[in-house]
Amino acid sequence: MKIAFWSNAYEKTGAFLNFAAVSIAGVMWYPYTITVFENYLSKCNLGKAFFGGHNLPDGRGGTGSYYEGRGIEGLLRRIYRGDNDPELLESYWQEVIPNHLYYIPQRGVINSELFDYELHYNLNYLINIIEENTDLCYVNLNHKNHLSSNAFLQEADLIVVNLYQNPDYLNDFFKNYSSFKSKAIYIVGNYTPKSMMTCKKISKLYDISLEDISPIPYNVDFHIACQQGSAKEFINRNYFCEKDNKNYLFIYGIRRAAFIISKKIKQANLIDKKELKPCGI
Image (tube, rainbow, N blue to C red; front, side, top):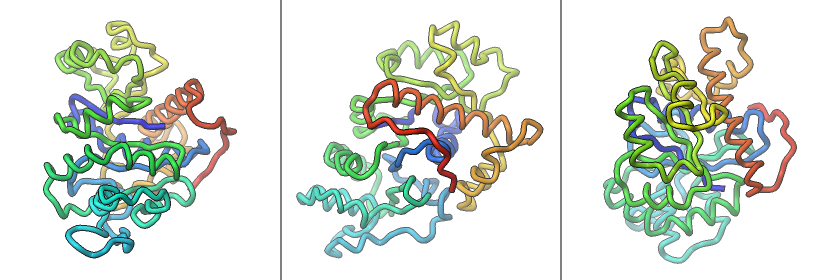
């Protein structure tokens, strides 16, 4: 099952932090296996959030020419040359949470435009390989008009939209991206209950179910954890925190988002039904 994370206000919603947190929360209580990656090259990536930028695989299955054998770029080149063996992925991904969460790292050895083109060209083959190995494929999409962003949004079974509590941005989304609504759920990123555009107001004004919305406030401690490569440790440490904990509202938001995704998965019946049980890390 293909799940896209997208926003028309990427920076303003803390979309990257939300993606990192929900990816981890998605396997904390639910028995799915997930592969995650980004469709853009940046120093601010999941590799840094999960590992501090260290201990990433070299992809030794490559031939050593050009950028082969180096992260997702090398994986795409192998696919382009006709190597579509599902076992190929094991040489390129990094295990984040044993037997549950995997990341395809990036090496930044080509420019962003070329990477976007090659990802777009090989996207279907890449997704097929991922779906042979894990239940779910999470992709964090750049909000810009990338070829691969448009392609994955069309192919996605579910779109997790990061909304911004500003009427102009909300109107822009619901006016210009209304085609997403049929397969969308919503995160209200950097959420503040003091805004006039609360979750209830957004639900009523734009005719979307409140059950499909999760508020996720900004959390400075999680931001720091991502910068230090300890995102999963932060989530694991705080996942069952009490209401009086300063991290509670953030944790509640990401747990709710993970629950909504799991509910949609079961409703769609696109992967085998599994008993919900805690996985832990």
